[in-house]
Length: 373
DNA sequence: TTTAAATGTACTGCGCCCAT
DNA sequence: ATGGGCGCAGTACATTTAAA
Image 1 (cartoon, rainbow, N blue to C red):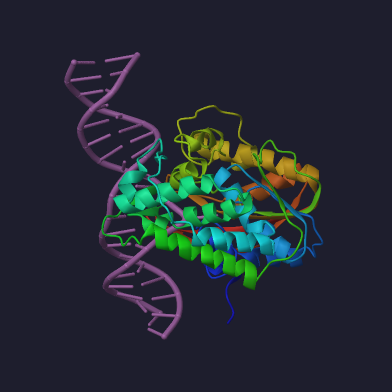
Image 2: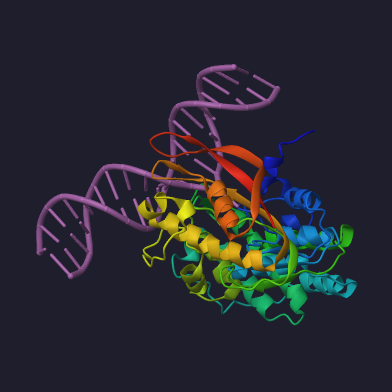
């Protein structure tokens, strides 16, 4: 069956794949995109991903036996990708199995109470599930084997959506009281077993990627052959909010996402009116819609960082945007900015999607922009 | 049967008006 | 000056209906 390569711009293809399925992240692309560009550039590594998300790029590189480095500004993304990309020994698996068997024995009331600055997690879960989640989280914190602890914690974070009365809808969490919420305890056990099964049955052997918490605009990338990445899209989605439940449970801090929100790439509409002069390639729209100007000047910094450290170039998966009824060709604008910096660019892959905006729907592109040095 | 279009959804941030 | 009320645009969408 032949598929349009553009279909791999979504997480759909990753859903059934070992390791990749450990944490659902609808914003992610899928491994075939990475494989496509590894082949496109005849890559021998190392590969760099400045917006690594849940680590599809480093994990795919590991599977191909290539070295890679990845960064992200989200502690959740860094945690998820580190856990997915780590090497696990037989001892680790044994320890995990033992830990899981005794996990709910001699259970005590948790003293940890899960809270979050923007909304109360309590309202999204049944009393029982909320209580179970608090217990599991606290117990993980007390575990001695940190590697096993990370596996368990990622499992817990990944089952939140199916255990709660909410759905992620665009830029918000939507309370959905009629939604079926499965018992957190069972979902958690099942998830851990799935993860251990993946490690045992389809282990990925290859160089362990290096993954850091860092900002693509200011981080100096290590020298690399190739970058493969997908930056945040030009829209008003605030990921520190959409993933606020996971972030706050991960850190056990009420204000976990505050710092991230302050520092994030300015791709969503905020009150932040601090202006730097937008790149000219963005055109007059950058002045009319400040967030667009901010987005492109942020992305210019990123491209400059990449230019300095990359050997061949790389690929950027981006979606075009519609703001105030106007189609903004993000792919072409980024390409032109790259050109000024010194890259050549082309757009070898793209797909159409329908942007549901008023007054009329518009067809916009989701594209892979290739930069060559 | 497959694909495109139409409709449904709830919540956010912003700008504007207007009363304090 | 401040802020509440309100309408509007917008949502890496989801589900249903119509068209090819």
